[in-house]
Image 1 (cartoon, one colour):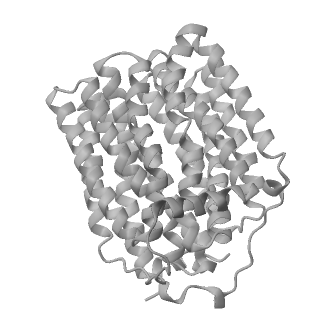
Image 2 (image 1 turned 90 degrees about the vertical axis):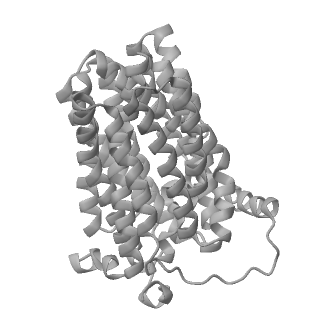
Amino acid sequence: MTWQHALAPLRNRNFAWYFASRFVNTLGNMMASIALAFAVLDITDSPTALGQVLAAHTIPMVALLLYGGVIADRFPRTLVLQFSNFASALSQGAIALLVLGGHAEIWMLVVLSVAHGAVSGIGFPAMASVLPQLVPREHLQPANALISLTRNGMAVLGPTAGALLVVTVGSGWALAVDAATWLVAALLLLPVALPPRTPSAEPADTVRELREGWSFFWATPWLWAVVVGFGVLNFIHAGAWFTLGPAVADDTIGRQGWGYVLSAEAIGLLVMTLVLLRVRLERPLLLGMLGMAMMALPILVLGVSPHVVALVVTAFLAGVGTEVFGMGWNLAMQENIDDSMLSRAYSYDALGSFIALPLGQLAFGPLALAFGFEEVLVASAVAYVVVVGLVLCSRSVRALQRVPVTPSESVTSATP
C-alpha cells in the first residue's frame, strides 16, 4: 500500500470526525488507567482492593454487552456512542472530584466504577462495529491502522504522563482529564452522518435478535474458537499483568518505572501500527494468535526478574504482537460478517473474551498472597502460551484469509 492509500480514510468527513473523537478520548483513558490503579493503592495498599474496583467496572460492562450489541444493530451507532461517552464523563468526573477532594473511599470507587462499566458495556459494540459504515471496504485496513495509531500513540505518552501526575499533583487530575475527554469525544461525534439503514421487516424483539446473534456465533468456528481462547487469556492478562503488575512494580521498579513499562508496550503497538499502514496483513488470525504469544514474555519477567530494562524490552515485543492480533481480528470480523449482524457478533465476542476478566481481577491478589507472586506469574506465562497453542489447533483459525475487495464493492454512502 502507498502512503496515499494509507491516509485515504482521513479524507472522508465522517471518518475524520470519528477519528478526532477517538483521539481525545484515548488520551484521557491512557492517563486514567494508571491513575485509578494508584488512587486505589493510595487509599489501601492492597492488590485485592484494586481487583475489586477493576471488577466493579468489568462485571456490569460484561453483563450489558449483549444488550449493547442489539442496541447498536437497531439504532444509529454514533448516537449510542454519544450517550455512552456523556455518561462516562459524568461517572469519571465524580471519581475525580472524590479523589481530588480527599474524600474517596473504596466503596465509592466501586459504585462509580459500576456505573462507568454499565455505560461502557452499552457503548462497546457500537464503537467496535461502526467503522464499516464510515469508510469504503478497501480502506478498512488503513482505517483500522489509523485508529490504532491514535490509540497506540497516546498510549506511549499517556501512562508516563499519568504516572508523572500521580507522583506530582496526584491521581485526581489525571482522572479529571479523562472525564473531560469523554465529554469532548461525545461532542465531536455530532457531525458524523451514517448511511441510512434498510428498515427491518420484523418488529424489534430483543430476545429474537440475541438468539440470531448466538446462532451466527456458534455457526462460525473461527469466531468462537478465538473468543473461547481469549476468555482464558484475558483472565490471565487481567490478573497477572493489570492486577499484580502495579503491586509488584510498587515494591520493585517504582510507579514511574511501571509507567515506562506500559509506555514501552504502547511503543511496540505503535511501531507495528505504522508497519500495518503499509503492509497488507494476510492470514490475519494465524499471525494474530502467534503475536499474542509474545505477551507471555513480560509476565514471565515480572515474576522472575522485575527489572526496568528487561520489562521494557519484553513489553515492547508484547505490544508488537498484540497489534498484529488486533488488526487481524478486526479485519476478520469486518470483512466476513454482514453489517446487520456485526454489532451482535462483536458483543458475543466481547462477552466471551471479557467474562473471565473480573475473575482474574478478583482471584490473582489472593492467589499471589497464598502461593507467592513469582510462582503465580511464572505459571501464568506458561499457561498463556499453552492457550495460544490450543486456539491454533483449529484449522478455521489457521486458514482464514483476507476477503478480496474491489472499489466497486465499497459503500458509496460512506464518502460525502
